[in-house]
Image (cartoon, rainbow, N blue to C red):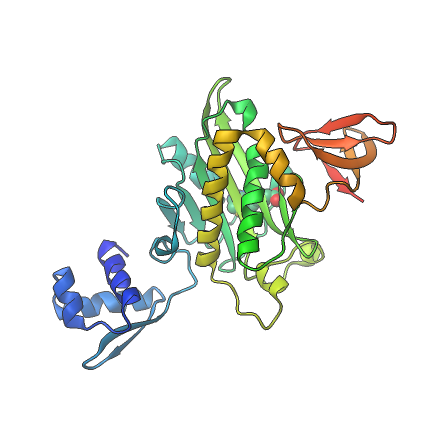
Length: 324
Ligand code: BTN
């Protein structure tokens, strides 16, 4: 697909029927060339009908994350405006990191239909079957020192929480990097940074969001859900491109707020979106397990655990946390 295909799609989206002659004239193509282009779009999954004397009509778009499908839905200034679509890759985080090193602009996005080595935090694998979820990584270059970056993961959680809310769901945040629906994980965030002591080279913000999945492997079934499952069997499945556009919109807004206001804002905004704050918690700290109440977040993103003794323990992202 190329720019000419994109222009044909834009024209078809704008009008109920468009004649081959009008398309050809606007694009400087013969009617035969237009016919070939339309055949190519149909092969890519666009549902286009043709009728004599009326021309072409776009009936439906494929549920694929092609730039031609995603970008017309974007309302962002930067995020997703440069978008790389892969049918398959190891990990979109690795693809985005290689692209960042090669100079990808801030807000560049890699999406894949399927990952063969998708990964989560603490070396865990991320279940990445084809076609039903979002596997997406963004290149970010936040204008803050490396030590100030960790709350960005929490900030992304806030953005996704807001996006899912706008799509009619009722999400909940689980510190540090999970978004839940109905108490089960619907989205995980994996932030990876390249920096020297003083300067961030780039941050890769990877997110796996279960959109249309209907079944999970037995080991995940009681802990994972999808937007579709939480909507119930009668609701139409959300189009992944629409979900991605909404997520990118909110990520850009919250990223820019983070860049301007920093971690204190994140700590403030995370708390009311997480039902787990204020609740009892047990935290694994090395060989010890400490119990207390999840009291809130520190400005660097650490979880503050209030012990029965009155002392407060700071838990930094990356340590295992067991919620009671
Ligand atoms: C977690 O909850 O442990 C984080 C999961 C992050 C998964 C996403 S899927 C897209 C991106 N590529 C990866 O390999 N991981 C992240």
